[in-house]
Structures are given as structure tokens and as C-alpha cells.
Image 1 (cartoon, one colour):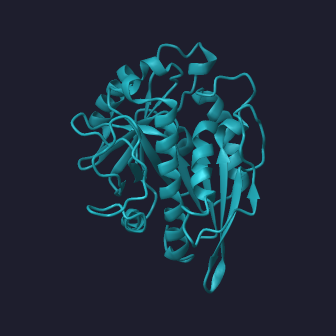
Image 2 (image 1 turned 135 degrees about the vertical axis):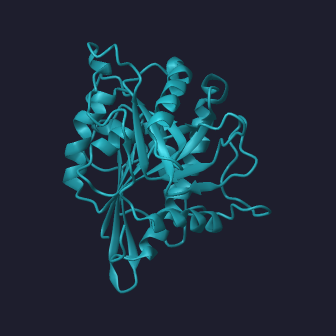
Length: 305
């Protein structure tokens, strides 16, 4: 493995992730300051350049290059930044041009556990399920992403051993009972134990063709019901949002992980989500991502991803 491409959804997610990845006090000692850095941005920027490029040294091997991109940077000006179709228009070309050995999709999400809050935690997985949140609105250009893989379970193409790196992330962030965990509790309904959760059975459930935040709770319930009918036994829904699945179907078979900083509880979007909640959760995602990148650099360039 020589190159990792990190794809972050929107500018307001990208900025706190990069804040964590570049903070001299909080980023891993093994993660150098980026060689290329294009931040901060105010969300109105449109650029083809990456937001950051890191070069992680490795003993006896070439450095591991990490390229960080923001999907919103690539989208046309004036288009709804939640448009699944617009994301799908720009992502395949960008992904192909970077020619990475591993892709990590980063997007804030809710956690589909009706009983316990996971707000502030970070979820790592490799399976995907895409739900069409507006199947009767395809005449609207913003709701017109149609793909044969919608409604099907898409199994992970990453080696199961990679998901054990979540434990490495937790150890380095001191996220264990009694530890001085570096993850920051978000203001609204934080999880009792902040951790990075990861497993080969974890699935990102994504609803496409959804641009109205007010419809999230209703559409999330529909997506979970559809996932339950399609998923193999033993696989779980651990993240619900709108972008991971679009990134997945924009690839050409490259290994891909999803990393979801959790902002809200199932059916509590309006109650949990604020700008501050989003920032803190995305920042936690950046802290976990930094440790994950270092763990992947140590994982070895010749080992199966």
C-alpha cells in the first residue's frame, strides 16, 4: 500500500477533521504536518486541489502518501451540496485520478441504536447498503441518482484484519474504561464511553436522493427496514447518512472503508444536531482518523488490504 485517499463529505466536516489532523498537541507524533495544506476554507471554495497531502515515513519502505479531498470542493457552484447525483457526477473521475490503494470515506452520521446514545463515538466499517430515499421524485435533478446497486447489500472488500486496527486507535486515544480519552464529548447526549468502534460486520446504511434534513428521521427508518431485509445474517447497521454509499459506487473496485463520526441518535436529528455538535463529532473523527492512518502505515505496504 503506497497511497490512501481520504474523501470527506462537506466543508463543515472537512475543517474540523483537518483541525485534528494538524493540531501539534493532539495529532499522533508519527503523523507529520501535511506537505500540502488548503485550509481553512469557508465552504464557497471550489477547487480541484486536495485539502491536504501527508507523507508518513515508514521504516524500510517508501513513505505512505495520504491525500485528503472534500467532495463539496468538486461540486458545481449553485448545486445543492446534498445532491447525491452531483456527488456521483464528480467522484468517479476524482477517485480514478488519485489512483489510491485504499479509500476512506468520512461523513458524520447517526447511529441506529434506539436504546443507547453513541454521540461522539467514531464508527469504522467496510460494508455498504444504499436506500433510495425519494424513489418517486426522480424527475427532480437533485433526486435522480439511479443505480443497480441501490437496494442491495455490498460486502466489504477489505481484509478483516484491518478492522482490528480500531482497537489500536482506542488504545492510542486512551478510549477505554478509566482512560483519559482524547475524544471530546459533544454537547448533546454524549455516549457514556467515547470509543472508536470497528468490525468487519459493520455496515454503512446510506439514503440517496435526500436533500431535506427534515425528512431524515422518516427516511432513516425506511432505510433500516430495507437493510434488515437484504443484509446477510450477522451483519449490522452501524451508521446512517447520505454519502458513504455514493463514494462506494463511485469506485472501480478499490478497497474502501467508511469512517463515521456519530452526531445523533436514531430519530433524534432535530434534537441532537447543532453546528457545535457537528463540529465536535467531526473533530473526533479527525482524531480517530489520524491514529488510523498511522496504524495503517505500520500495517505494512505488502500486507493485504
